[in-house]
Image (cartoon, rainbow, N blue to C red):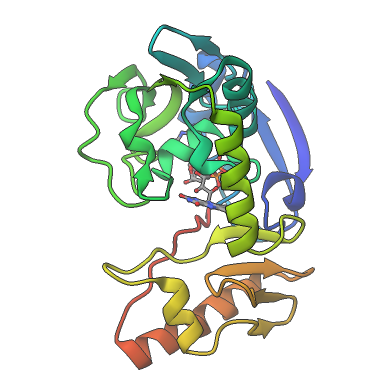
Length: 275
Ligand SMILES: Cc1cc2nc3c(=O)[nH]c(=O)nc-3n(C[C@H](O)[C@H](O)[C@H](O)COP(=O)(O)OP(=O)(O)OC[C@H]3O[C@@H](n4cnc5c(N)ncnc54)[C@H](O)[C@@H]3O)c2cc1C
């Protein structure tokens, strides 16, 4: 199995952390062998992950699970296929699917499913037909076709298993290129510029409220601990400016404390922090 030493800025969009060995299984057998023997963190594009400087888990990437097959009304996508690869294919083949996510850097199909990513009132579960995964109890390949266990930024994965392959409904759309452009421009107008290092929303929105709004009201916009701060543009986006994991942790604990004290709301992290 290929193992590469990769720095945090290559593995994650926020780029906090150090250098880690990363395992790239090529097939199911290699994946099973590493899962059976080690504590593992499955990493997708790292666009919702913050890595501590030292972690016990082995980092495993499904980058080599790259299957793409277009059917009549659906598409099969391997967990390691990137969002940008899908968007390019949508433009080439004129179908709608992930345009609402256009402009999110580096995300993969596995990560989008595991996080039940959503935007503009829609979530991944709304397009899903099937998830093929490696069950972590039985180590057998299983299929999920009912997505009632999915909710806001939550899915049974990776706890239940490793997403291997997915099938999504698609629809013919001759205007998909313009729609993709529109969503990218919309993101550019509301979120920090793409060249900044961030993991997207740090906290989930509390029921019926906006984490960004609450953080803004307790003065977190632009608030900095060492080299990590909350964006001046969007208070829920942490920006890394050569900061450390300790600084990130301190920053989020100050934010949580302030929101708890002022609004009695317990903010829950959206970003994933492997151990
Ligand atoms: C600028 C910016 C904007 C963003 N905007 C949005 C937005 O509008 N909406 C939104 O929902 N999110 C948004 N995000 C967050 C992020 O892009 C999504 O959560 C995305 O789904 C994460 O995908 P990933 O491949 O990068 O996952 P990673 O960060 O690598 O992993 C996230 C989680 O998925 C798990 N995982 C990854 N692959 C697999 C697999 N094959 N099997 C099982 N588990 C797996 C990981 O273990 C981890 O728990 C944004 C991020 C950025 C940086």
